[in-house]
Length: 601
Image 1 (cartoon, rainbow, N blue to C red):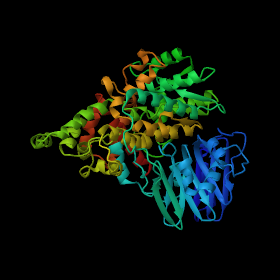
Image 2: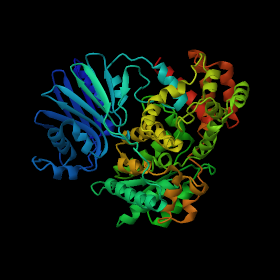
Image 3: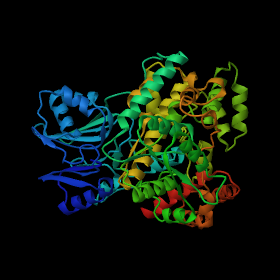
Image 4: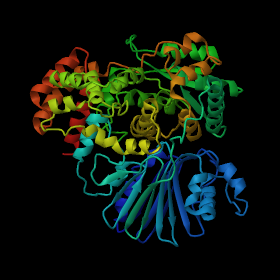
């Protein structure tokens, strides 16, 4: 199952059917609906496990619908010997596990999932989202009626009156996305990673059923850490490699995707299929030559798919086609183009991606820079320096870094950060409260503090997994791939691998002036130095130049004149800077936000 949808309460039947149909792209193989008075449960299925038979969704008064993959379902099946099984699929195992262990069944489940269980006897609905937030789950409750869905569009399709969330618009400027549990709709929410929701007697209860943070740093030896990392990554990859359907690998030429592809090729008896993006006529942005180098070295069946200006022009017609709400990631459009072409040209149903490695193993350059700035907090006398910075403000992010440290604030709030407080106050036509950005992630820092963990680098890794991955990159990856009926798998974000890696001393990944040091040492067992130690450029294409060419800058001015969100003079200055190559992500985010407001006005 790859799209789940359900409603409890008095809803129009025709609208329920229409809402459910809006999710059909996620599961093109077959569909299921259970409908009775005041209860509607349904799913669309992308058949991967036990693809030849229908999953069992009802047993002993319990109904289940779920989106995702349960990697240890065969192991669970063997443990649940008291149950007789009618199918070879995951749904029936989940039902048996719930009937055996109750709510505690989730402690036994490994995988990526958004899961709904309706217990008829208890008249209770249970919702679960996987620990890393790989699979989405949204819900709406008006005090009586309750709806859940894999995507926002199905809830909106019910005709529910929605209101734009001003808090999420501010969150978008701060973090380029709406942070869970909020969405751009005030009355539609998302379940957070590792969270359970119970709906019973018109009441909602939520709690977190698992945690990825370690209770202590247990691995400090480099040799031990490398061996553990290798073993965990091999195990993670084994779980995700399937022989039931065709699968492929996204290969950028960077160390993360190259290592996964190399390890997978070593396990395969025939060439695996790898895919990369290219940009015709844009040599400074095109890194497909490096992906080809990797493919040639490890022996994959490789294909380069080109993305260009006309493709970008098509994608801008509806920039919310995949996400239903603004997500300030220009890479979403080329990725969608790549997945669309894979779908059209092959029979692939599963794609493997290298998401999560940079956050987990400290791969971004600012991590090291921020850690250096962090040392200023140890100064015994810093009042003069603090006063100096406040009297000499700047819009550059480095100024904001120093201000935070000197003001004893939390420095790092995730790699998704975009507009600083100074910038928001300069551009918005209202005053933004001091440190409003930190308010959005304060719950994570409070939780982190309860563990007594003092390593700033561990905090960087933890908050980026929560925000930069779960709310940003994983949302993009799920929507783009599932829109085209393909499932994405992310071995670096295996829950066991994540927990073990977070228990490793953080400096093991920043050794010898190298980001991701430990991972690169492992990669050298599979790949040559020229690939492993190639300078990281980061994903890029001329999205802002193309936006300006399409009249996007003028559209920004026109929409802002209509909706009066930003200060016109400050906005014009920002557009001038963007024309010269600066603040590209900021301007693209403004464009998306104004387009969203116009669409939903």
